[in-house]
Length: 322
Image 1 (cartoon, helix red, strand yellow):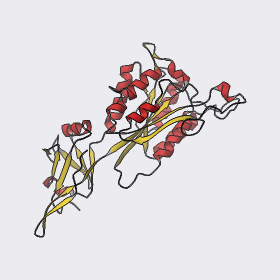
Image 2 (cartoon, rainbow, N blue to C red):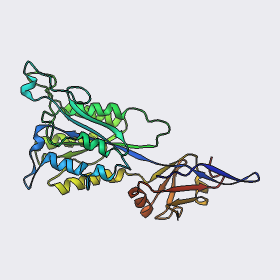
Image 3 (cartoon, rainbow, N blue to C red):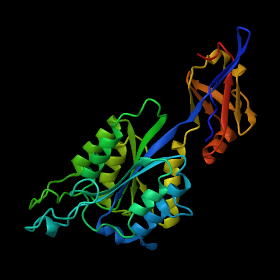
Image 4 (spheres, one colour):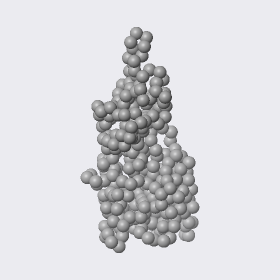
C-alpha cells in the first residue's frame, strides 16, 4: 500500500493542514494443522476426498486457497504437527522420529508469520500428512510462545488469530508411557494461554459427527474466546467457505495514524481512497475510531480490504492533529 508522507503546510505562522502517514492494521493468523495419519481418511460419507487434500487445497491452492488470496493482507503462519505412533513410542527406539522444525516431539513444520508468505507456506506444506499421532497440546503451546512475543513499536499489528484444523482426539505418545495420560485438559490449558496472550482460537473439525471428539472440540472452541462453535465441514466447498467465514471479519478497515486527531474537528479533515474523497461519518465514508485511528465504512471498507495496494491519504486541519 502506498503511504502518504507526513507533512505540514504553513501560511506565515498559520498551519493549513497536516497530512498523516496511514498504516494498514494487519492480522496475524496461525494455521495449526493436524498432520496425523487419519488425515488420509475421507472428508465425510458424502465426499471421498481425503481430509488432507481438501484442507491443503482450501489453504494453499494457488487459485482459490485462502492463503494465496490474502497473502498481501494477512501475516500468515503455519504450525503443522504430529508425534510418534504408539508402537514407536513403546519401542527401544522411541522418540527417534526425525525432527522437522522445532523439536522432535511434537514434530513440527513451522513457518513464522509474515506478509506475502504464500510461497513459504506452500513449499513447507507437504503433499501428504506427516502420518503420526496427535499431540495437539504441544503444538498449541509452541504457538503460544510466538503469540506472546511483543510487537515492535513501529508495527501496526492487528489481532492474533489461531485456527486449529484437526480430525482426531489429542494424544501423547511423546512421553513413551505405556498408558499415556489424557491430554485433553492440557489442550484446554494451552488454549487458555493463547487467550491470555491476546489471541482468539477457532476450531475446524474434519472428523464429522464423532460424538466424543465433538464434545472435546466444543470445549476447546469455548475456551478460544470467539463465541463460535467448532466448524464441522462435510465437503470441499464447505471447507473453503469456512475459512472465508473465519478470516473475513479479521481483515480490518481500521487504519492507524502517526498523530492524534481531535474527534470534535475530525469532519474538517479530508480522507481519500484511491483518489476519491470519503464522507465523514457517511455510510460509505470514514469515522474517527480513536485519536490515532480512523475506520473506513461500507463500500469503502470492502474496497480497502480487497485491494492490498489501496492508496489512502488522510489530511486534518492544524489543531485537529497533535
